[in-house]
Image: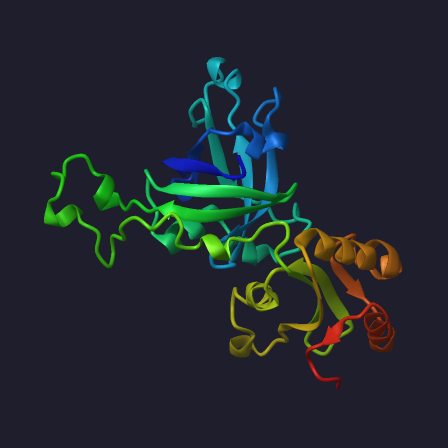
Length: 283
């Protein structure tokens, strides 16, 4: 099977009472092989790409059946479920800013697509750290309430209560490992600080970089994609990223992240040598 349909089984509420994520039925353990373990609640972080090319960053936790049969006094969750949570800042190979994690959470995804318990999500593996997700069927709170008679007006889909989505509606847009992808270099304002990464859409990644508070409101510099190189698949784009970070600019890396500090003329020379296109005109 090249995809797994998973039903949203319940919402997750954190210790402070805030809504923090959701649970999915545990069907198809091979979807998350790194989580199929006897360890207590093993988890892994994934870049998740939806049917519209939007990128989210989630921590997916495997609720271990044996753990929940023990008297431990705390804990939520049920057996046979995946717990979908916000990835922790500083724990990402994708180097998002700390405040941006709030905009990439599973809860924001749930709000964006109007999902509730009963909604069905279709997952595909792109790589060991990347998944694609498609909303196959949406359920709103009103659609799933048991006290509303079937066919009643209040339970019908509407502007605030969307009905089911066609399973094949976004099929042609779903990313996979062969989706053409960019390796990019983004610059912070006019400084010598750059980010190197890969994405199927440089525009969506640039939007994520600058999403929290518009730079125009505070007067500080913004991130801009300055160079990019289109490759035939996501693994090739990631490989090019790693060559730049681990080989070409290994001495320029800052704190082992995707950021580098490098002289502009040196960067331009490397970009020209490796076949990158400059999409922002030189100073």
